[in-house]
Length: 214
Image 1 (cartoon, rainbow, N blue to C red):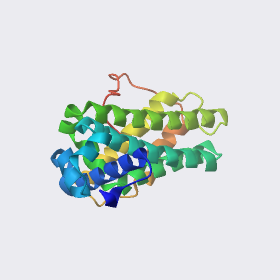
Image 2 (cartoon, rainbow, N blue to C red; image 1 turned 90 degrees about the vertical axis):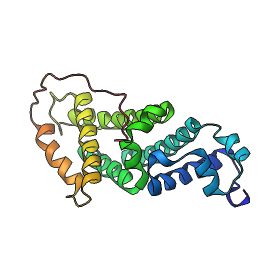
Image 3 (cartoon, rainbow, N blue to C red; image 1 turned 135 degrees about the vertical axis):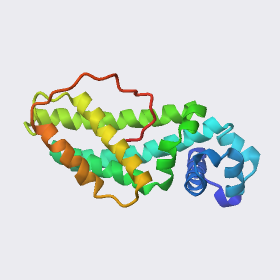
């Protein structure tokens, strides 16, 4: 356990979450348990139990780590990009970069069985999604005020469509690793949508309980 001893319990939990993500990247989501993490880290079951007593606690720690990383990246974009349109594009680039930069993330997003079994993970990832959507909505509304985007745009619906586009990219990456620049591709799809009057066809409600990081 000395190998992973940290000054604070929260930092140790981060190490557990990171070890879990590495295992997910190697084995796939459905083949990772708390016992696997214990063996990989070389710690005792008692040490694991103090920080992540159950598998739900383990996946909640993973979701919390991912959320913290993403919030830091979103905040950096918000602080460095005064133009709403530039900020929106940067948010797309940052989010896609985060998803592609964490190898285990696509496995987590596409693991239907884990989402069913782990309420904690599903709720954690849904909170991440809502946080990202809030950043998008803010940029869209500011863009409308600055006359960078169409005044008739529904910011909430548009943010949902952006999230869906990124989620579609996640599936595409999983099927075919050779793809065009995803940021440019999504931006091209959105360009006319953001600057022209928009007609929203009637559709069923978006399932916000679906787990997505985007």
